Length: 496
Image (tube, rainbow, N blue to C red):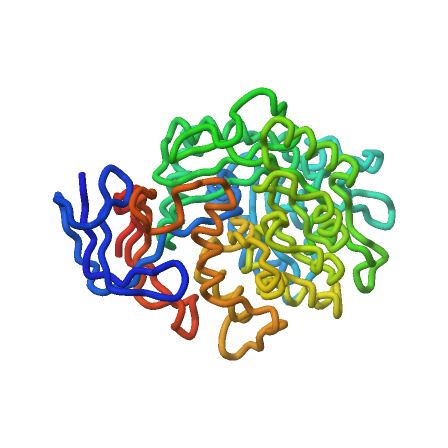
């Protein structure tokens, strides 16, 4: 079935938009002019290649849609109020962030016990690197004052040595392992819902990342194979898996392919577990190594020997510096986040460096906390213009459900470094050009994953694009862009 999309302004991948038309036949672009079974007038709207989210957690995003939404709570009392209305044997919530609260104090165990009516709870912080449970949750997980902290994890305790219910990084698995995974039929419904949400923003493909030492990877791969979602999925593998078994790198088809091997160097800034060269301000902490550099080196060598590129979470400047020195070995090696970059490490980077897989919206979500924890070192936070100037390859994503998967707000964060006119740009010298930002959401993202026919509007390439109501290169605020239509493989998956 051939479809002609005409009366459009089409992005040329570099300078701007020009009048033109697109034709898709059997899921790929063809040279316009042949017989078309259907013609669609785009009424002069702006057309981009379909956007990619180069870093999100698709299965977690779907699961979060079925949990209590704590993302916009203003304080602990609003959080507790929402828990009171929750259903289920376990009260699961997602998205709290005390740095956005009027009062950053977390609720006590007794308050959580009352709000959950004695049921256990597990409330994941927005950064996925810490969580909060109550007395019943601690009991079911077997966590007491005598429980040793796992390597790469933290169990918060009060002055009397009693657990407070706050668990960070690898200590989170003590709770997560006793919570039942939703049944497959419910997961499938939530995945369809997540996919529809992505299409509304023009997203046609994603890189589904792994969570440290969780075993959801095989389940995700099975679900994606069964469902054949109308979404291009690059599904990473976890470093702790037996890489000699299961799918190989890029095994699959134009809808689902096996991806990189995911490693974690450190934690997150918000949970104060990102590994820093110097202590956080007002604390004596430097964060955690989730995987020590020597172990990372060994893990990279094993993955590379089996033909896999690696994808490495690194946020703190010490972790980022260590990973920069170890990569790349494979041309598709990626550093995820690359959040706090020291000047001495920046000058070592260039076109041959690992791909910088970054999530621009984090710089708006974290700016207040970064200033408080890092002081002047916050200037090293998401050095996008500096990386662009040095020719480092950029690929953009959202880290959803950690942050919104709205790529237009992400583009605004990257290029303007502020949410609106009343806010000053945060380190404005690091604002990225809009052309580079769009490239990082389109061809830069798909190319970083090894997808050779995605991200450009060329004959023979996958027939994916999005239609916009305005020019994202010229409008004052990219976050105001509306997607009118999203087409994947020549089929409209979303239309206003």
